[in-house]
Image 1: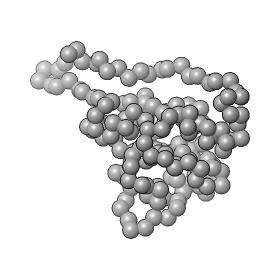
Image 2: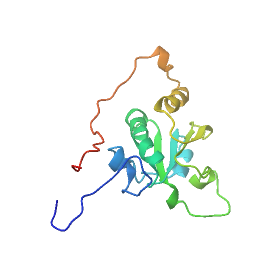
Image 3: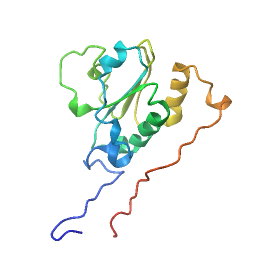
Image 4: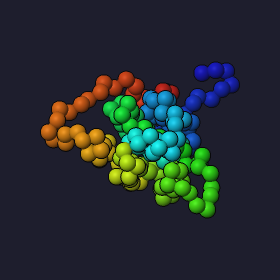
Length: 166
């Protein structure tokens, strides 16, 4: 600890702002900001995963590792677009190519688009990886999980909740 400084305290289970949740809780800072816009993804007919989140939500903090896991398996074939709700401009009306069009007011919210730009999943809350994976398997015409080998990734970064001695 530095002289006169306070230790950094971050918690996965509260609604306090700790910083951007993807580098902090998912170990994947490359997700934010997204490298392209939703409109670009829809225009190029690339499947997309739009994730609307806020950095000061316990649910969003807990959901961030799921998005990182999706990036690990689908990041080269689909566009993963985590968008902070706070960055969406307030307008009376949005175009279907804008993230605000899909915003329901609950975070996190996951919207999956197929190659044609059709919404094939639109759910709010912390949903399991398997729910999104099942939809993406249909989008990419992959075997169902029950008929394929289970893919597992080695954990590179763990969330360490014991950074500061109590």
